[in-house]
Image (cartoon, rainbow, N blue to C red; front, side, top):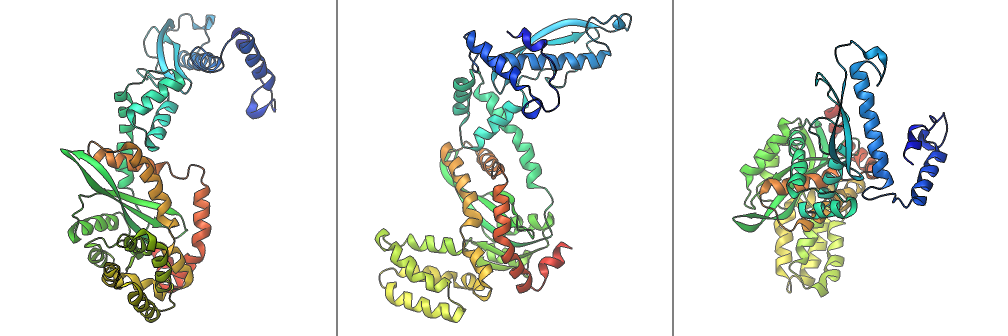
Length: 427
């Protein structure tokens, strides 16, 4: 059956989708089924086709290297010639495939499509990294490859593949950044790290919105939960050294020492408490049966037209709920200085600051990956998992378009409210 592939006519222009001869494909599939050959799996049609395609490509490479076709008399006396083949097994997207790699007498042939000592095609590495980004452990990925592709891939090999991203992570963490961002959100994802004993450790994520309305994750930092002004000064100075000269507004969740560090690094930046986090923290002090009523009572506070109006609405909330939940009143009192800044801005700015869409979609992806792992052997493994998760965000690009559309009105409002700092900073 496979001999028919070698003697098939070259497909002409427009013959089938993407230049493939649909009749030839149907013929191959039909012959495979008639002969009892599976399309997928070990020894199936796809594996045999992959073997032929790879071997044909390698034959083309050695022809280019030597300068003459196989059995061509023009090769006589050239000083180098073909010298048989060596067999090797490579892991491909369709499972393990044994191929014959041509050799030359001078051993100067260096194949590119399947390089010497290469045991996996690049698509396999991408598949492993993608599965890891979704939170699968090395054992689960190994079992998946064995079950679906019949491939024997050790957990160590999978760990080696995913370790490749560490170099990219270091480069990404040190890449140059834009000179100005309208908003930077700083949030923490808590992971379990088994370093002597299992403990909860925060991984901080800095997510910015660019002047064009795109999402840009600026970096990741691991902490131990006791971070203060000195730690945050180091993090923000790192961002400044990478090119961020100005930030209009930093939205965060009451991280100790962060407001002081923001004022030191970007004196003109406004520190804004994340309204969503403030509400969630309020619910921690209340019984679940009161959550809806408390949310309804607090909404007039953060939607008030002015700070004076917000104070009046909060006084009403305190009168209604302060006796039962004084901790909620204390929480808002302590956060008031960082809560009120956004009340001075247009509805467009308020809307994007109050929205959970800005960072929650990112956090949701990270949490899924982290939860699937359970705990990590060390800090580096946790950072790698989070990095893989954020690198797999928005594979279709549709999210980027939605972000841009959502942020355009707010960006115009930012530029007016902050007296052209966005326009000046990016010029």
